Image (cartoon, rainbow, N blue to C red; front, side, top):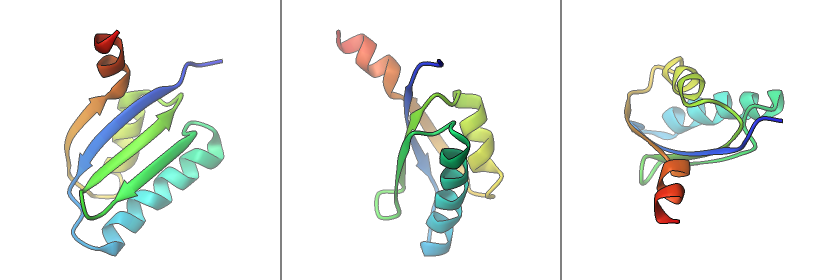
Length: 83
């Protein structure tokens, strides 16, 4: 079984339609099993994702929505550094 990863993405979202598009692709990824959980916050423009999906695949899925990804932070690295 693939290990779980945690990512935080800063995605440029200006309206409910923007956050809805990101939510739709992540819901589909969740149904496929590559994402365990996610949270899309329009107000902070942050998307938190957890699952076995690799960073490159996650970025590609979100880019397909047409939304600009400002930054991606792997929470795996942040947690490893805190140990």
